[in-house]
Amino acid sequence: MSQSILFSPLPLSQISLNNRIVVSPMCQYSAQDGKATEWHLVHLGQFAIGRAGAVIQEATAVSPAGRITYGDMGLWNDQQAEKLKPIAAFIQSQDSIPGIQLAHAGRKASTQLPWLGREQFAPAHPHGWQTVAPSPIPYHADEHPPIALTVDELKSIVDDFRAATKRAVQAGYQIIEIHAAHGYLIHQFLSPLVNERTDAYGGSFENRTRLLKEIIAAVRPELGHAHSLWVRLSATDWAEGGWNLQESIRLIGELKNMGVEVADISSGGAVHHQEIPVEPGYQVPFAEEVKRETGIYTGTVGLITTAQQATDILERDAADLILLGREFLRYPHVVYHWAQELGVPISWAPQYERAKLS
Image (cartoon, rainbow, N blue to C red; front, side, top):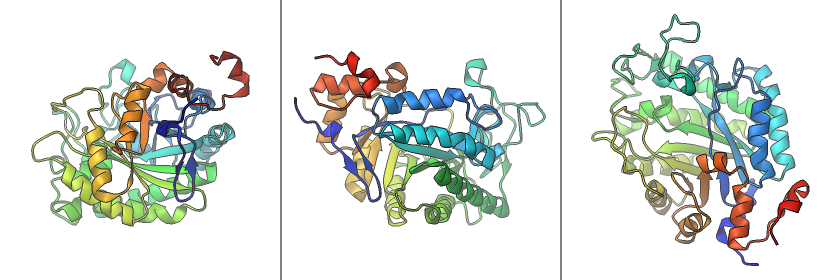
């Protein structure tokens, strides 16, 4: 049997992942009033049984208006937190690290479940509500315009993230990831293509990044022993005049100094029309550049589908973690498969050991 960097531990400051394969947050749109159901326990639990190094729960809204759809998970009240405790406990029981992604959808909220159409509901619709954003610009031209947030409302959103972090920690999650990517509210503030404000939250780099840094400053004290703070960031808008890689590097450097331990690097999502050269590993260079320039631990995503591809990324020091989404949906126990493919000894759940190939 051989050794592999893919199956080596990653010791962070307060926690240690058993391997470098992480379940990326994937919305299931199956919550009830923001509360988890049996679906979420089984969905997330299967990945922990399969020995993922960490399991990051889907984008979980910090307020009702922050949901993408009416089926989104939420963490704005204690009843929702109670439903999450069995999920975090089960993931831990399988020697995996439970994580949660906290989010606010901003102008991309109030939409239909994706398998029913994805259209955005008007505020008066039974499944809709008024969306908010840095500026009153809709994502699609034919959508109901969002309302520009006031400074007082921004302070409330910062507190929503703080309160959700506190609940997440109490529920047992050890990784708290702030979602600042894919065109959702925090990313909307970062991007000059979406943020046309002229106050302290718009215009300059310092102003456009202010909301995220206020959120980080607010949530960091809520983390205690055995916790790690991550940020998911879109490294580029893939659009002229938008948020770009150099700004991402500058921001991640500042966030690292504020206590962010891992940068989960993705891209795109801020504007509707993008030309993205999608191919295997197409987002890896962004994580590699962020890692080289800032020294922060990075996770990379995007069409990573084989053990050798993932290994090559880590061996050339382009990233520290491999986050998989669709590959885990296709093969919930992909970690077992990759370990056997690479000839790496890992412990299987004893209930599943009879399936090991000799």
